[in-house]
Image (cartoon, rainbow, N blue to C red; front, side, top):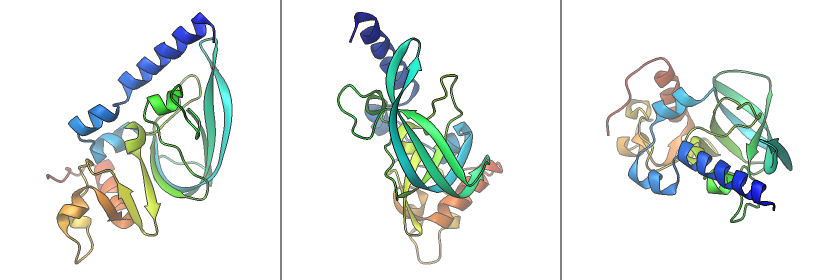
Length: 194
């Protein structure tokens, strides 16, 4: 790698890490559902169909990027067709010099289902979830696995018999609880207090 490319890669890494909270910030600052929902251009539930590794040109340098395609099951914010395709910095195999890994971006596995809070596309035609890896929730059956530090889920949306503290954030939460909370947040309802 040339000196110019190395400097550019370092600059991009620092810019991405400062723009998206990294692992240390995740333990210090909670992420809220209103923040994720408000920052995202699109929020959708979908199944990852493919992950194609390639490169993209950015400021005269080639950087690794992955093009993901999802079959959309439901749009909660924004809209579009039956599929969503987007490019994200980094590759599924990652590695210590991978910009996606440095920015704590998620990696999506074809065949698995997610709820994703997708940021608007950049001028370089790249995007990622709001809150980095905290803006992509894995769906398991009719439950969603949400980050432990997530706040802003509405306990009133929890089904009968569920502990309200579990519904307020962290662990497995019914999809209908997450869905109702996102829709209430987007409609301007006040977030739940924890």
